[in-house]
Image (tube, rainbow, N blue to C red; front, side):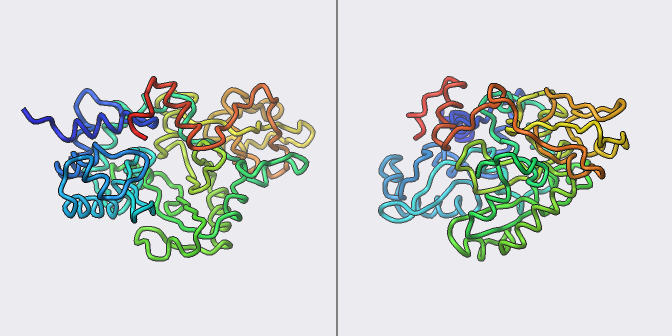
Length: 358
């Protein structure tokens, strides 16, 4: 009996550090069936994280080279696998389901796919959020950090923007998904930001609106003023995107608000502090905190276990009574230096052998 190609691909995706856990109802297979043909799923199940050209892949899988190339090109164009230059031409590699395949479906997302993902989210997604190191990391709104505090480049959203050569913005697939299941939130939709070292990288990408550096900084400020939390990939070199997230729609932050997973996102290296002499107990900050980390007595109180150090509430304070300071060294979880280190630590936590997928 022939093995189901969707089971093969689901197993392969779950063997990646990010994870793609099975669900009791087989929803992970239904999601893949919506995106891949059976032949594509089988081919993708043999791909590695390290990109290979189509000849290498065809030789390893026993496929016909021309057909293999055409399938790989089609999948890459649809955001199902990754592609990039390698020795011998264009290379193709496996991409995680989250963050990866799912986020690339912003143009293809419809009500049926949105509902299917929601069911999968409720049944199984929490299993990949409860593993450290976390997939995403919070970085603070820049103006919220005290001026005498050191902010390292990988801790600064503005530095990520300024160190890039191409800037783009697209719709947040999380908010789009929630709207399609009739549970929308009021936060802005087009604030999912992407960056590249190559000028003009997004000029010809249909679902990404190319920005100038100044427009990217403006978008960042719009997100901050809307009360959104900046999150990035959880490594020091992770500067290819900034998600501007909310606990009402974001798949990762909902892990905290809905699934009760405290470590669903890695905290920033900062913590909120209150100047008791300046605080007038106006309570403006309370509605901006998405993590229930603030309460009010004679002045604002900070729950240090809940505060993720995003600084959103700081910007909302009319009296400048709030600010972020660096956490004590013993409370700061070191950020993996590279994506490779992150994968190694994550694989170790999940008892995976990375040699199987690299």
